[in-house]
Image (cartoon, rainbow, N blue to C red; front, side):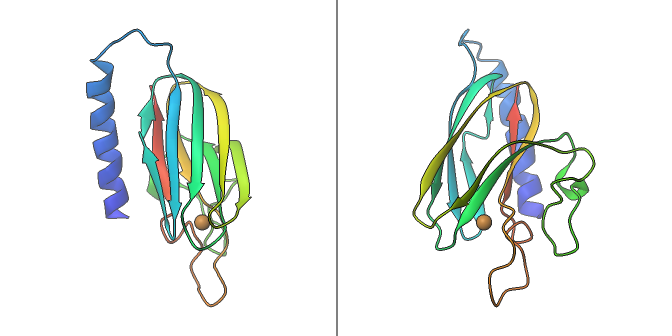
Length: 147
Ligand SMILES: [Cu+2]
């Protein structure tokens, strides 16, 4: 979890330097979303407001999913369910879009017009057989920032 917080801080610092670049583009863009067992790796982790094309690639050995969640909460304030998954109906979170049941080796897209704000990309699959931790509890979430 400390690593995720460090990544968030880096992402926020990056936003500041990107904003200084200007460029006058129309905003949005393509974001690579690589899924692993158990990680969500974004490239880049921030874009300017506009239409965002999330290109999702499951490189893991399990089926995964992606929830695009809008929230200004910090990671440790995200509510969880009794079985250790992310609470999709928790306070302060809105599910903007989702791509469920992405098989191992599969790929899909989420295309959404996004306003500036804080977001997360979360895999909310339950624990695999023989495991006690959900994918979320294993750390399958990444903060995403729209400026
Ligand atoms: Cu997963």
